[in-house]
Length: 160
Ligand code: ATP
Ligand code: MG
Image (cartoon, rainbow, N blue to C red; front, top):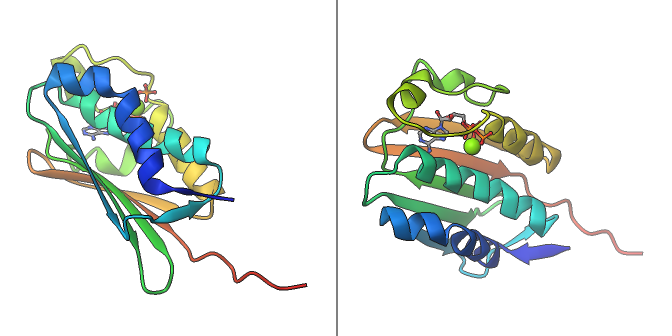
């Protein structure tokens, strides 16, 4: 079973419409090829992408945030899904810990009233790993923050 990554990302865009319109944020979908398909449970993947896009929106209430959801099929059939934003980002001192359960960046939460439990990213990482993939985060605060998911090629279908 496989699903269209674009359709999945469009679900997320729709579910977060209330936030993007209020914050004047923009979510850009960029799939190569445009009908890129991912194997697995579509609802799981919608939740993974939802969590990452929602994080970007939650941490950046100021108007004009730009988020991109980029999917790429590599030559070796591995897939890369990158969710990037141009918001406040994550200090390098916090970056190694953000996938830990209950970890939240102090600086972010003393400055604003952003709500959350700090569980989202630990669940995302587990879900990605359950699909045989891995997730990494990079950040240049104020410029570009990316969560990049790599999925290995699907094993060849064997006939009989
Ligand atoms: P929950 O997801 O459980 O509601 P949460 O969003 O605070 O709570 P996580 O999703 O695990 O928890 O994220 C952990 C922390 O990482 C966030 O609290 C925030 O400080 C930081 N973070 C995550 N994504 C971003 C981002 N795109 N930009 C800036 N900071 C981020
Ligand atoms: Mg979260």
